[in-house]
Figure 1: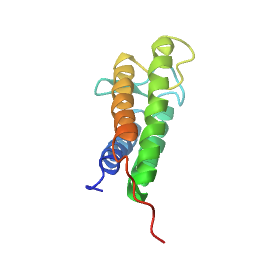
Figure 2: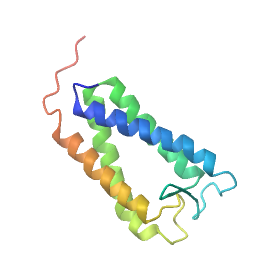
Figure 3: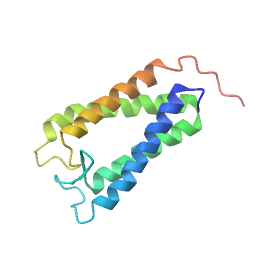
Figure 4: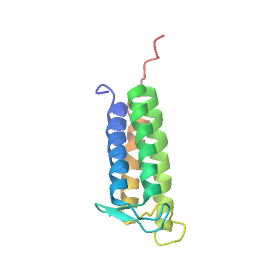
Length: 134
C-alpha cells in the first residue's frame, strides 16, 4: 500500500470511516434510525443510518485499497465525487425534514474536505498504473 498514494489514502480514509461508523453506534442508541436529529460525535451529528453509510464507505475504500492501485484510484474518485455531491446537497438539507442522515454544518465541511482530497488523489496520483499480471 505504501507505494501508491491512492492505496495509502484510501486505506487511511477507509479505516477512519469504518471506525467512525462503529463508534457512532455506541453513541446513537435511542436515536431514530433516519431521524433529522442525531447525536454529536465530536462536532459531527450522526444517526444510525449515517453510521451505516460510514461503514459502507469505509469498507469500500479499505477493500479497494487492499485490492489494487486501479481499484483504489477508482474508489477514491467515485467516493470523492459522491462526497462533493453530498456536500452541495447537504447545504440545503440542514434543518429540513429531508435530512435523513442528520447532517450539520461540520459534516458539510468534512464532506467538502474529503471530496477535495479524494478527488485530487484519485484523479492526480498514480497516473501510470502497471497492467495486472496474470
